[in-house]
Length: 331
Image: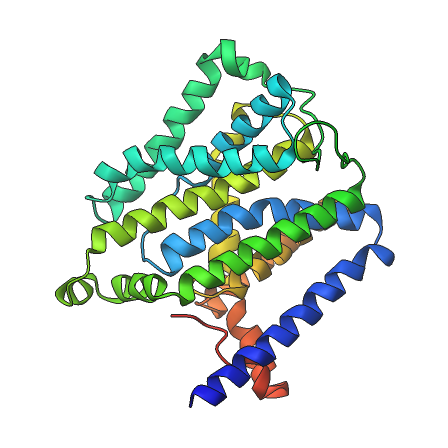
């Protein structure tokens, strides 16, 4: 049995490497516009990965992801504008600050259940939006922050500056691969398995002696860090940020990406970000059909595939290449 599991993991690693290699070669054949749609999809992938962790693997629906996304974006922008810090430093701060902010929110919120917890996370986003609008000395209010520096990839001063669409694509691809790898490590660890046990039956999970509240706290904090990373990448790509980043429509997009792709799986948010974000951006060239096609895909996925678009994709792959899927669903 251990040999079979290792073989399955090896096959998955091989296919993942081939997929990354194919994506790395994409700029050779894709237009800048097509690459820009994938860049936007990767922006939403990060908060969707965080939502996948807290909802798909721990069983809690949090609508605070875009709040943490905005905090990460503002933190990264302010550091770059006022201190000239490099992108890697800004990215780290954009992960740490939302994660730290998540702790005082989680302490009372995680004692709530179901609808009360969801409402608490929504209220948190409204508070952040109001803060961003009224703390004018820091955020410039509704005017927002503009002329945010492009990402500099040096250690501190100087360094290579990212400014073209293919360069942003490669940067986003690198960050996405690292984020997905981190999520895989988390959910396949003993802590990740215990999170799945909490999702399936919290009372039973608590009966074996684990501190379920602590694991839910860790999941919530990690989901905030994922969202903050997306905010950093976003603000250095768009080079502006304003309180509109907290708009509920962005929260809806993250929900669609995670739920439409398939929560509780590694590939679900990836598939969702490509279908529901990149496709939506690509269809801007046909505005009269954009929302019709988008709505049809979303409606079909909701009614026909209750576990998201990952369900028919997994079935198709299993029929064509049964040895590829292996342990594609963790938990």
